[in-house]
Length: 175
Length: 194
Picture (cartoon, rainbow over the protein chains, first blue to last red):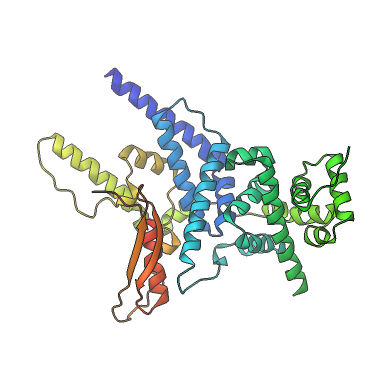
């Protein structure tokens, strides 16, 4: 009986911790993933996968520390995998334009559309660097830890992303 | 002591300035580089230009009002998203039936391989209300109603973990939307060894 009770406590504790993570991070994390992949429904799916991974992990090891950084790392990896798969599919004859229908009308500001257009031209790692720092608010060293790279590499990726963003803005201004 | 910096270093300095992490010395180095490099002036811009460009990201973020509504998404695609919960419930039912000494045959289509989720996890996720709609590309929206039967042959490369790596069309149906939809669906699944 004691074994059953311990197991029940372990499950309840894992669930409570995941619940706290969901409450704190679901909005910002899903928005981050939506920016990265450019699709709200895919972002909802990917974010759910992240929380499910967190749940599995905490159930296996209730004492494991799971921070926001862990969630962002998992979400970033999921987003990068998704974008790579989508890129693979671009070799197919049909290459559909980014579906903007999932974006709210009030979010179609110049800044929002410029950013999304630029993200569409970036390598997934560059998008991740730009979004983790300027969008999610991590420093270059924190973003480097999340991405498993160096701060210099993050700064360089941000610069390259910014160059594309600048070009998109200039094209928009000229048109 | 300030030395000259090359364009690659200038790029990192521009990134540092964009992230508001640059010291005065780094800003001086960047300015000194721009003074002698027209290409970087055109390509990266001065400090104010960098700050103006990067501010777009924060402006876009601050204007966002989208709340990821897991509950609404759940209600919209209820049937499809319930599939794996039904699968988990049926799996539990099968275990209970077997434990009671009775043999119960679980339906073949009960639990999709892509969502091998335990009943505890199913309950946890249900409690968290994070169920989401199925992926957009998994839907058969691209199929035309009433069109004659078409078939597509695909070659799917899967890695050792069952993760699809690449999908190519071996034989097209002639309908690019159908081909794409089939490949997207195949790429979405995880594959298990039998």
